[in-house]
Length: 128
Image 1 (cartoon, rainbow, N blue to C red):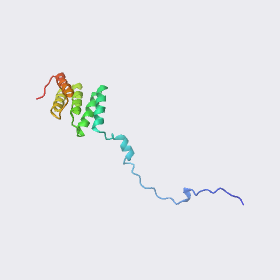
Image 2: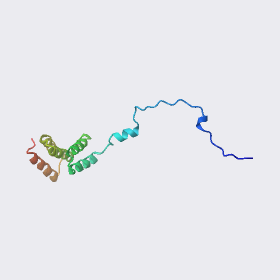
Image 3: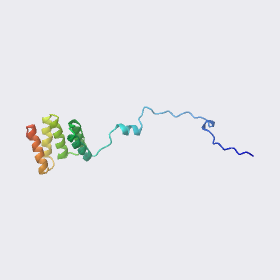
Image 4: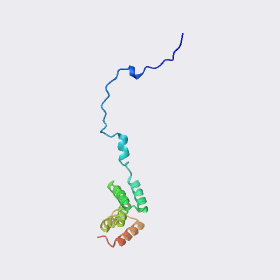
């Protein structure tokens, strides 16, 4: 008696079914995750904003500080960062508004107060 190797049945031997319609128009969750920025904490946005300032990327920094402020983190640090970016972008009116909001909001330390007052001097303005 000869022993032949048993071969598993092939899929071709099974009856074929109609393929389910595909949803090519809808992006997959993985594709969406690659195109949308991941949620970022306001602390992380502030860190990225200051790194952008250090790199001279003032428009990028402005956007990062703005996102931190929109996320509900209206802190003197976020306001000061956006004010500084506005100052570097030549928008002294917006810089003044943010510098003044930073001074008038939560209590700021003496170092932050000096930084903000320095910013106001640089743009040649004062708070109302």
